[in-house]
Length: 179
Image (cartoon, helix red, strand yellow):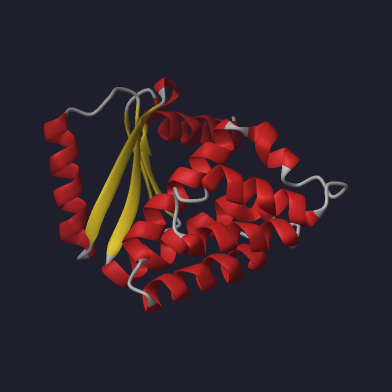
């Protein structure tokens, strides 16, 4: 994440916090980012320097006015004017990071070869909450290449208990072995 995203995303969070709008702006920021991701051409259009800034900001107002909070529209206009709209995803990540930090929420990702059952997801979530002392927001992803086991990614740490990793370690050990 860039320093620009940390500053802008953190500033938007500070504003939201001061106005008690964190929940609303988080939800709307996520929606706007998903929209921009789906409409890559629109994001590129808003980033073309040959189009006057006023026109690009007008397009943001026209597309989102009345649908999202004015603070978010102004935030997007600032990014557009400064040529940093490409940083929107990371700004949203910083906003969410600060939001989660203030609420004791830990986002965790579980990667498995087969989909976890609801009971397994619940048990894993409960165990992680017990270990971390935080409210865990677990997302699960299936990657058949892991073959078996589970890889957890949380708070910048990766815990890898997959068959894929074990086979890789075994392969490295065999290569290092002197025969």
